[in-house]
Length: 218
Image (tube, rainbow, N blue to C red; front, top):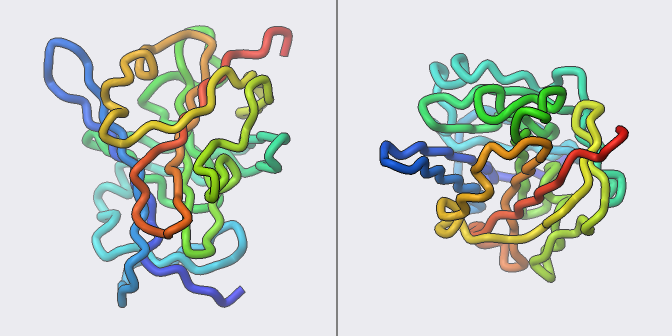
């Protein structure tokens, strides 16, 4: 496809505040303003070109996060037709910036790997796009209703480990830091986050959060 989606980049920032209680801020956003950006061009799931903003990802940060778009596993949510490569990356200086639009990413240095989920929470993040772009996150919500598409009780498979969805909800970016239960390192849990796009194609102001528990016997 020849469609070009300019400046439709989602960023995920995780800031750990130095305070008595651990506070984590996650903001996921896209920018759709037309621009003559000269940043790197990557492809979305439909082959559209996504032009990253200049300076969106510095070479030093890109090197430090050591992102792998495909680590050999898959993230599968069969009920919504999602089946994508599962990559890995590091949080760098409190920031997570997934570099691609065709994979979901585990954060190596936050939470635990799916194989070790008995010891904590597995955190996965992925992009969504607007203006005709399609990234993995677009499968997880309905734009018109503004609601998650995945149902309670549905299964999400992450690198061969199966989880059952307990909650699928939206939360504003401003309110997300106060969700202390979400950031507790709870054993046998998956947290999957993307941003919620809207019918007006204006900047996203909410996140889609999916929480799931380990499926027993799987």
